[in-house]
Image 1 (cartoon, one colour):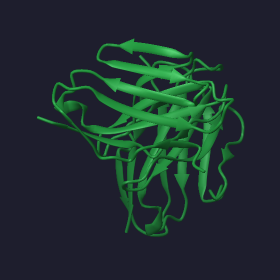
Image 2 (spheres, chains in turn brown, purple; image 1 turned 120 degrees about the vertical axis):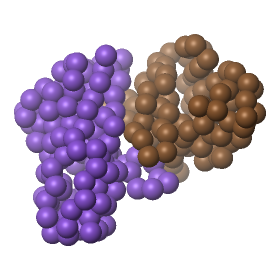
Image 3 (cartoon, rainbow over the protein chains, first blue to last red; image 1 turned 45 degrees about the vertical axis):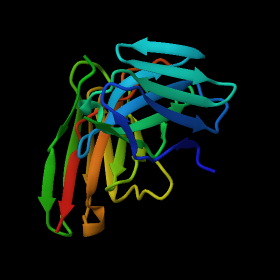
Image 4 (cartoon, rainbow over the protein chains, first blue to last red; image 1 turned 90 degrees about the horizontal axis):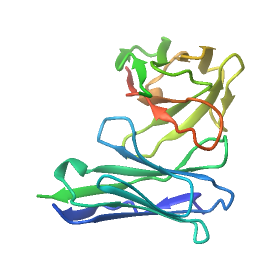
Length: 110
Length: 117
C-alpha cells in the first residue's frame, strides 16, 4: 500500500472552472501536509501548507484537511492555463522527512 | 524569502568522472537539507538527509560511497556523484528546511540535470 496516494490523472479542467486535487495518506501520525506544484523540467514549488483540520485559503487556492479520514485536498478556483502542472501532495510527521505522492497532472483547457 | 540555489543547473560528464553539485540557502540558515533524485515522469525520490556538522542519513538502497554528501555550514550542502555512469543521469534536487518543528517547510532548489555519457 502506497503511503501517499494521488490520482495520477491527467485531470483536464476548463479555464475558469474549479480544479479539485485529492490525496490520501496512510500514516495516522502525520502532522504536516503540503501541496507542491511542479512544472515540467522544473523543481517543486510550495503552494500550500496545512496542519489543522479544516480549510486554509490563499488567493485562488484552498487546502482542505481531514485527519480522521486521512484525506487532504487542493482546490484551485478560476483555473488558468498557467496552473497546468503536476501537483505533488507531501506528508510528514513532526521533524521528519516528507513523503511524496506520485503527483496529479493537471491540464487547464483554454 | 526562503530561496534555495543550486549549482550547476545542468552538467554533462563522461562516464567514470565525478560531479559535485552545490545547494545553498540564500536568505536563511538551513539546519537540515535534503537531496532528491527524479527520473522522467516519476516522483521525487529522497536520497539522503543532511544535517549541518554531522554525517548524512541515506535512504535504503542509496550507496553512500557513491553519493557523497557534505553539509559543512548552515547554508551549504554538496552532493558529489563519484564515478558517474549513464544510469546516474537524472534530475537532482535539493531542499532546505529553516529549523525545527512541524511548521518548518522544505524549500526546493531549482535542480541540477546530470547527463552522463
